[in-house]
Length: 85
Image (cartoon, rainbow, N blue to C red; front, side, top):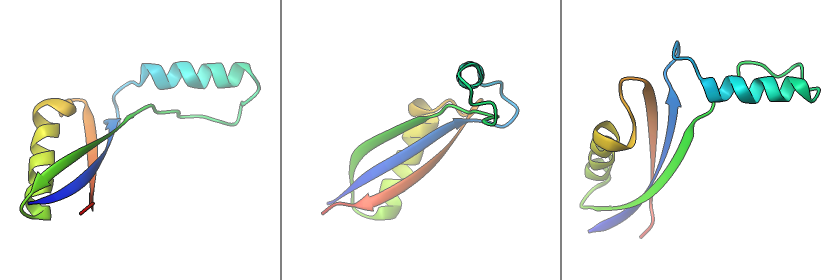
């Protein structure tokens, strides 16, 4: 069995209002960062997964994201795998 580190980047889908991003953008403008716009806030998750192959590790991670880690209705996610043994 091989061990992989999965790095998952989760962002709101385009067209979904990012309330947290808007709040950060407004705060940035209030302290003088007027040239920063379209702030989007996301999540970054790492996990360790054991699988026979990289393909199986990706499939398991992808399934976990679709079922629990991300909300596929409003969020997109990207997975990067790194073999660690």
